[in-house]
Image 1 (cartoon, one colour):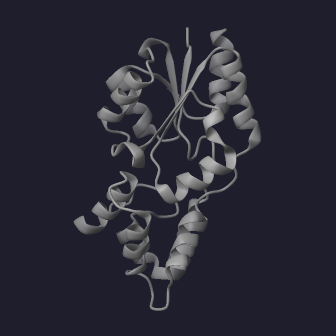
Image 2 (cartoon, rainbow, N blue to C red):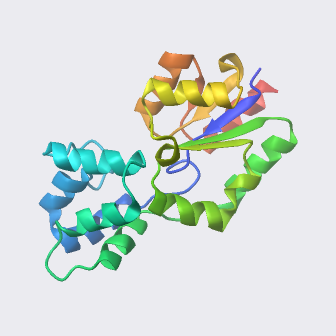
Length: 210
């Protein structure tokens, strides 16, 4: 019987508009630089940065090892002359789209029904802060874990084990919702969590769970 639901944030709760973000960066730095420096394309993943330096930049920001200012300044240095830090900031924020209130209402209903709800996100300060503040995420979850605060990230084993330990959850009674197959596969392999890829799929599973 499932009693704990672990949610990813981007792509599960908040919609992401990766093509819009990539388009904005194409204008600031050119398509090749978007792929080689930011390591993203219109699909949002699967592009490996060319140099160790740029791989490290994205890694360090997601892991919280560099500040937002350091990240923005580094990205800006690869952009066309005349690009400002605010241009880069707005382009990075343009990845975020809507977070439908009904998804948060559903999480609230799960808590009212006795489920433990946990948020586990690979994130970064620039994306995280406005989402957390605008939607007051703390009221919907028993525990919240973000990569840039923990200095570890999915799909590494250590973050899943940390969350399970700190949130005091039982792997045999946990389901994890994440839109990325590699993260779902890691949680299944390391901890044996049941997984699904969307809130709609979760609803179907939990209905059959009762």
